[in-house]
Length: 320
Image 1 (tube, rainbow, N blue to C red):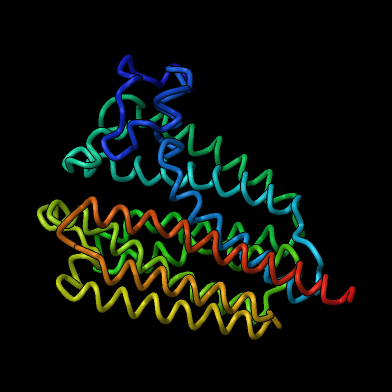
Image 2: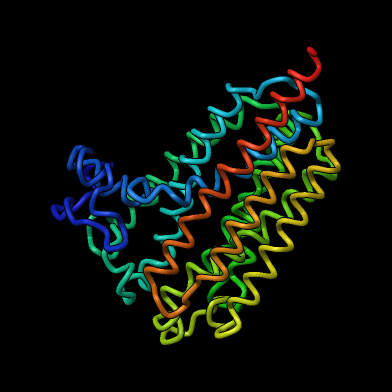
């Protein structure tokens, strides 16, 4: 892929932190592809990963396992980062002409000339093969379930061209791991996984609506759809409703799986964090929106730790 990189390989991406590890430590020749895969902005990979971890550990709670399956956790981590990179590169390839017209995205590797379109497609394939290698470590039901997500992933970049609700399509694709994690443990799908998935979809619609407010002026000029534009000044109410319903569905998933008090307490704390996002959101301040969007990593961590605590405390209680 190195032959597909332009000489402008050390240009930073506008919305990446100046202190990110890619621009500080990675070999210069690697940086364009690491930027293309968003390794300099890993929040998206974390948000893709957490539903996988939640679903896996929720299934293990239901199975009364004493500790999480660290091998599966590691596999999902590798898979999530690889598939996030592949998906971002594919999205950037499809959107390369649009990105060139938007201030925040014009510095991305393809429109800025750091990576050619052909080089981006090669990167898509390489990262997808890494994801496939991870997927093949699980049972065949999980393998085919994971492959089924590719249809939604392929459609997503085009959604904003035809609908005001591309965030729903993103939510359906981005949270497929909430189904895959359960299937990896159980070899099938059950209602707790469905409830968890539905809650995660609503969560994504909420936080990506916040994120989309950074680009709403450009999207309007380009004739692109987004929930940020559609909800407008009512965004706070809509995001609050999405977050509230997400929390209810996560509680429902826990109840169906036989989770214990500590899990429900963790979801309650998460609801308070999401309430902070809604109460302090300023849709006309891009930095405010970005901070609240990124804070959803705290949501992911809290729910995951709640599930691990549920498993561990139940095990200790069984010993007493």
